[in-house]
Image (cartoon, rainbow, N blue to C red; front, side):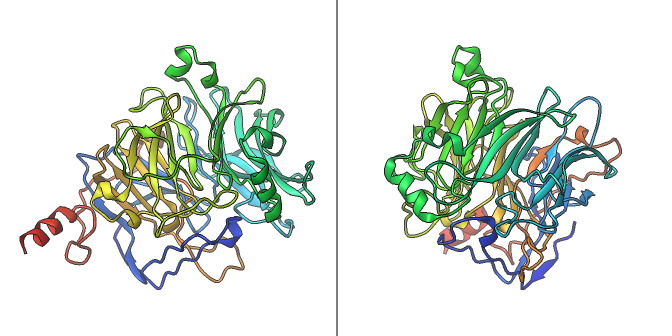
Length: 455
């Protein structure tokens, strides 16, 4: 894909996402490149990248940013089906509600009617939910090894102690024939999430229906902790995360009880301090999951820590905001790896996404990072060197009534080339940034540092 320049492509924080919008805004320039801006094939892990665009469609690109396939469905997020019977199938959202509740928006789930599995040709091969029985899926859905589907859903209801209706975030396991065989309720488990009486009072004072705003429901999968006898980390236990509450927890699949938790209150942030160190305050985190068996860091928990605005009351931030990706040992609760922009030779505040976003550990030890607010995807080595960077060119309106467009990316995932049908094109041509136009771009920073040192 060539790198055209988009002019006057403004970006505004989405009140529709159900977030607390007092966080510092991220301003984008009026003109900036899109597509693959830098690529070192020898250091990158090479494959396809699957992600939802701002245009409400789901895209698959190669390392050079060429769009090799598109599904004309939005996804929140897309989930690649990996089995021996199919190639190129993905879980997506099929339709929005035609007559949604007044408080419905893409971020709280109340806008969704149905989800489904779509094949390479775009044919729906499995569907769940309808206009008459809307599913309200949001933030996470995954195909399980047993063929069932794990979904995060929303339900407007009343709960004891609250004078107003709340959006209860649920996790449901659905069979291929549409039966719900397991469900967990966040609202019914609020007393297990570590909130103090003062925090519960602060939650009620907000009168925010989407007060917890869960964004992750991820089975742990096989891991050495369980193999070594720690039953908290049973493979079918589920890791969930509350963005607004600053809480991540593991739910015992059998008892539905919280058996492990970090947050909501942690020691003050010490971003950039020596590692390993005890986990410090996360704020508004996304995509909290256990790194899979066989991958570098297996058994540790990877977190995109937005450092946005969250907590009851909101967690304190410094003079500026900066995001980070952290890898945490779940037994010692120590941070064992951390990425900030400083690892790439840039100011720490130059990497920031107040909401959405994710990170994925790759087979060669690199990490794919999605700075979702600005539609920037990039891959870093364990030492923080950027070896691939891509800016999404897919702009659109999140809501029909919006008077702005965005290229935001909720979650991006890499898949190996074998996931797509045979013959799917791909390109691995090195890309060097134009250092004259973009002196701080990946691949240009070392040159810039040498020039400034010699002056």
